Image (cartoon, rainbow, N blue to C red; front, side):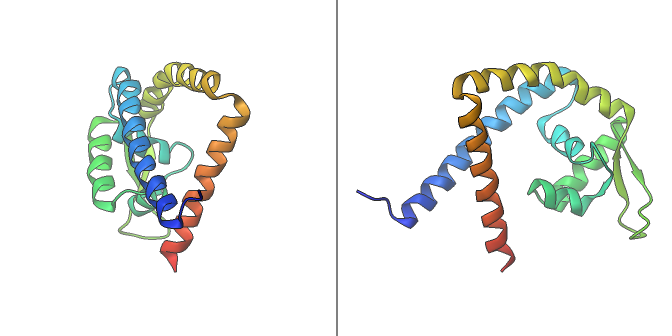
Length: 148
């Protein structure tokens, strides 16, 4: 018996919703000892390598601009991030991670590495890589459909 396109789509969506909840629960547990939340970690992760405007973070993370703005304001208030001038847009400042923000993310890394190793032991590196590649392809396909 083959599964219909609609069944595959529904199962992919429901599984993704469940995965999102599982990842958020794990992220909260990992982030808590560093003094941040999963949402704060998500925004800091988006600007880990380069400052971005709030709208850019929202696009990268698949969340609303308003929620990123609220989190960015909190991160700046707490000293984990700072606003910088944006040479491409006078009003849309760039969000940049501070040294305190880097320290928080570094405090997460040991437990993050342990969890990644446990997941790898459960799945095996080849299957883990195939899953990541498939999720990446699924996300790119949905992005292409959304932009039509």
